[in-house]
Each structure stands twice: as structure tokens, then as C-alpha cells.
Image 1 (cartoon, rainbow, N blue to C red):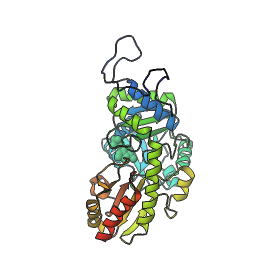
Image 2: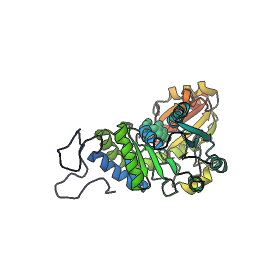
Image 3: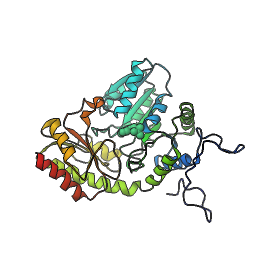
Image 4: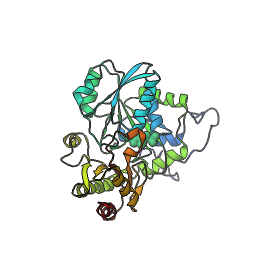
Length: 359
Ligand SMILES: Cc1ncc(COP(=O)(O)O)c(C=O)c1O
């Protein structure tokens, strides 16, 4: 893709420079670096092209999420998945506890009920697949139903799928948010976020919010993300193939009680995922027999997989999510696997070996 490369001129670098500056010589288009930076703009060009909208980058995924939610008037009703990313849930709950918003948490897989909760709402938040239960919501059905019910803003967190597997703007949502920290950057070395608006007006409002709040991306982070996103296709292809294979092998392992991967035909959201996604992604969750102790033991025993939080990097990360207070509603033995691009046999020797040794 040529987006974000700048003009093709003899002798010019293939990509943008890291513009490390706080200000610019007076009289030009760039004035002050809390408002604009050419390195961000190059990344925004790429992300906008990938999602099919107008992108605004932020200091983190959560900053992008907060900027979108900030668009709402005080007292607005937000409908959101009960198992949305914990940061989103915590932010919404915090705003609700301080009387800024009213939040209705719903089961996102129940389209009719979710739409029922949308009466009078100012925003419907969609996340699909959800983090970490990998539940699938009907994005097109929810977006159309919410708009019909008069909800002005429908937002989708597309971090798990990436625009290569799912393009929520095409499915009818108004804004897509990303933790660019994850698959888009892909190397576990930056914290960055983005919101991509269906139209210029929404993007401008979000960029204004970014200037007001100051949650701006670092130019170096934007540059790293720009470099990372250029290999998204090959990384995702390999990670996804690994994830599909591990999901199958985990499902057949006697120490594993349940595997959650939308690519498995028995996954409750499988058919919907086939319909709205072009692949099932690189995230797998599974529950081990033997409760939280066994799950922790597996995480501590593996050596190729890295025991760490986060996801979307080239290395496979493993973690028992229920250990976090904000995720104590999860099955205690649920292990989340962010599958990387290693050799799948190395991964299975490591993970399957740990399960067999401990099981
Ligand atoms: C689905 C999802 N959305 C948003 C975020 C927040 O992104 P960041 O950590 O870049 O603020 C995360 C982080 O884990 C996530 O998993």
C-alpha cells in the first residue's frame, strides 16, 4: 500500500521522517505539535485507508475511546457489552458513578435485547470479537437497528479483528476505535490508539477533542506503528493460521475443558463470524481443568509463549485473565492466548507439553 509514504520524488525517502518537534516555523500549515504532526498524519492516512474512513491517532487506545465517549452530552445513555474490554467498562462505570453518563451493560450477542436497551441512548458501543471471551456480535444488525431507534453514534472497537478481517464502517457503524498498541503495530513496543470516523466531520470533532485533552501520540510511536502496520497482512496470516491450529489441538487435549475461538464450528458465534469477518483472528481463549491454580501453573510453565499481559505482538502471549479485579467475572481457569508468528510446532510443544505435564 502506498498510503502514508508521501510524494514519489527522486531522491526522497520511502517513508516519512520522525518529526520530533514541539513547534514549527511560523506561517506554514503546521503550527504547534499538540495539534498536528506529519508523522501522525502519515499513520492516519494508512489507518483511514484500511478502515475506509478518516483516522485520528491518540496517545493510546483508551485515549481514543475516551475521546469518542467525551463527545456525548452529560447524562447521555450508553449501551455497551457486559464483557467489553475491561478498560472501556471501567471508564464507562467511572463516568456513570460520577453522574456524567448512564450506562446499560448488555449481552452483545442478543441483538434484540441490545436494541431494546437502545431506546433513548446516545451511543451504542460494539466490540466483536470481545476481549477476552471472543463473543461475536452482529455488527450490521446492531448498527442498523440502533440507527433506526434514533441512536446517533454507533462505535465499534475493532482491535481484535483489525480492518483486514472486518471493516465495521462498511457494516454501518459511525466510528471505529483501535488499540494500535496491539496487532496494528504488532511488535509490543508502542502504546498508541486511533479512532476512525465515517466522515470528515466526526474525525474533525475527535481531532479537536485530542487537542483539548492533549492525549497526543508520540511521533516515534507513530513512526513505529507505521512501520509495523506495513507487515500486518503477513503477520496476521501467520498468527491466524497458528491460532486456528492451536485451537484445534487445545480442543482435543484432555486437560482442556473448553476452547473459545470463532473459527471452531462449535463456537456459538461461528456462523456470524463467517458472515462478517474474513478470518477468525489470532486470539484464542481456553479453560483448563483444575481451576485457577492449574491455569496459573500453565502460564508459569511455558517458555516459548510469554507470560505477560497485552496482545497482538509477533510473540505469543499467555495470561489468566480472571486474576485481574476488573475481570473477576470470567471463568477462573480462563487463559487468553494472543498467538504470535512463531513455528506452530514450537508453540504446541511448549503449550501442549505444559498441559500434559501438569494435567
Ligand atoms: C479491545 C481493546 N480495546 C482497547 C484497548 C486499550 O488500548 P491501549 O492499551 O492502547 O490503551 C485494549 C487494550 O488491551 C483492548 O484490548
